[in-house]
Length: 285
Image (cartoon, rainbow, N blue to C red; front, side):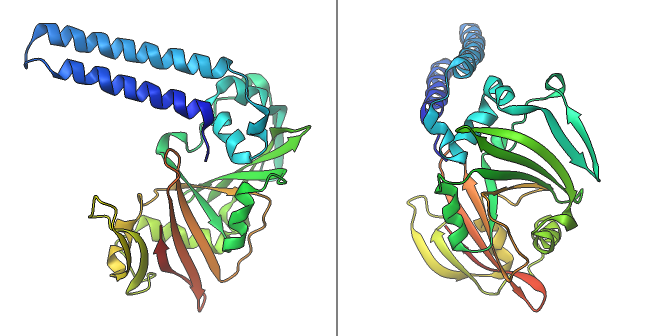
């Protein structure tokens, strides 16, 4: 996901904080002067971050950010002022057949997956993955999937007059999702990573060697019980999905994609439905 100027600003802040932090580390342990300096640095760092966030929120969003949904959405989850402006109030919220209208004053900032460093996507095939870069897409649904609560929160976005807007929120049961069978499987699969019964053994792996800092690339097979070691992390009770206009079906194949927010790195998990049971058949980066 492209970050543009916002990512550059935050990167600069992190570098500045890291650099000033080293100055405080140079003194001897127990030095009162160093302690005072470190406290001052911490205060300055917080003030700097507040200033940057203020600048980000006051900066206009370029029109190009509305071309691709991912570009818009990054701004949406980072900019409080923009987010409120891009929610169509009163917002229709539907759950269990009941609809109510959420007023502007009731809205709370939605950060979605911003703080976890990555997000996840579910596709039926490789062709669907091309929709992420399709500027013709005008209807997108961001799903917050609560695996253990058996719920899916669906945020419906539409592009109107060239601008993306959040127009509706729906809360449905896991069994009402287009990915119902697969999501039900993921409930147990991610909750018990030590259970490798649903992993092909040995498992094909294509990607960097996790034990090699030089980034050696591997094309190999790994033991089924080691599958979780090759993921950025094993998701907990909550995952996300973005539907770029595609309609998932039960099918016999799913691609579960991890995508890094800061580095854009991707980890693909391919699953096949074999005899009515889902099985992990490949990991690739």
